[in-house]
Image (cartoon, rainbow, N blue to C red; front, side, top):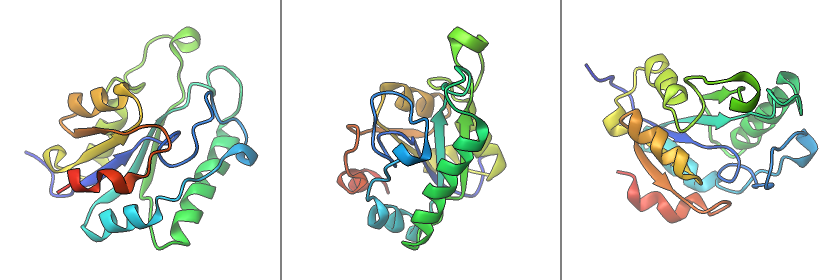
Length: 163
């Protein structure tokens, strides 16, 4: 039985913060994109805003959970200052070359399934905005509508695709 809530899952790098071409390893390199009004619109339509991000740099030892936490705290605080609440962050700390296979690394749907279960979501009413084909694939596998954007493209350009 589907849940009663709806959400927009958001990839992080290239969607909420500037794509750097590789992992963002330090909070000093974490540049937040201005999607404040677009996400406020979605929030006002009753969507929970959830981040789903692969963070294989952790498995590679390039940064740790403390630094990741700082980046996510900065993201959450910056959006809050614009009246937007990011409800939760789901991340995969694994990398296939370092930790083997897992169920959470996109394109697998594990991160989205965690969010669906935790927040009693109806996948058919939910979306996943990402800048990689693997994001759309993860969404589809979880029963969520995937929306592919270009890296650093304003989310406002795809609002018409969300009911």
